[in-house]
Image (tube, rainbow, N blue to C red; front, top):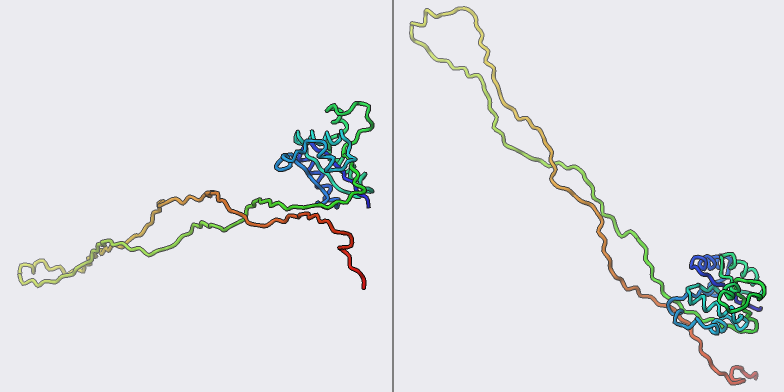
Length: 257
């Protein structure tokens, strides 16, 4: 089966990401998709030269297309490429074109790389990979993000409790006291009163009266206090290597008995 590489240039990260999502959702594996941004190691790899892009995407890539890739990349554009069967290339070109890529031919004219009489415009570039054997070498990168999770709960609850208290108070009482005393003086005889008479004496006693008053004793302030800490994350990443070995003719086969 013959394969082609379809390459598109996007001036915005948003359009490039949209194209990438469409490719993945359509069913193309991420191992066949490359997204090249002008940052990190890619910016140091000399990807501004047209020859580098032709080596990456095949010699069938036109020189003006490779030059547009290099210059657009230098200006911050994002390059998206996908390796697809030759029969699916038109469909992928249409898919990438739906996410507003750079018109390579128009940009080549704007850069003065070609004249104004060159044939019809096309946006994604196609590089024929027929006749080539490809061995992809992959390397994992560790991407450490962060997320907010619940680590616990602090609950502050106000409720009432009762505790026994006591206080001393002096209470006054008044009671009637009846005393009798003998009288021997005969002078009181003339004061004898044979009528009935009642004397009422009101007795009093004090009893405690309890009332309560409330006052604020303290304030409890509840708030969050943030702090940062640095944590080292340990993991492993895989990296493929390619070993090239010259095998003499016949050294890799077994002779039949």
